[in-house]
Figure (cartoon, rainbow, N blue to C red):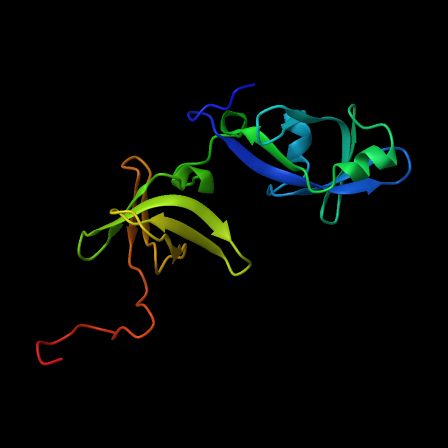
Length: 183
């Protein structure tokens, strides 16, 4: 199955290892509702090939325990530990009005809310443990930089215009507030 830029793959989970002795697999889910993965039936690898076909699933504390047709032994399940699981964007339900998936932000332009200055384009959305960060490619290229994806730093997302209005925090060492000519 070729990957289409019009229908990107979305990371929805990761194999955490085997469970029990009958070849069940534990999946850590990245969806709001863990059992949503069961509805997809086929979970894909990053290259678009089929990774797992879920036959049955039950929710547990940190995800799901699944029986999959591709796995028959505990050893086979353990061998898949760390495998990232994807679904096509088109398989996800459409978000409600004024809602979006983080993946929809990729490629959007970022503009300073006060000055109108072009700050770049969103390369990715990262979460290193302290909340979502937008990784931004500057308009002239060079080193990417991160913008916290908070109401204060990114107060407005205009989906139809593919634009994020931003009010980036000051860099370390930069003066705060308006500057006078005397400074």
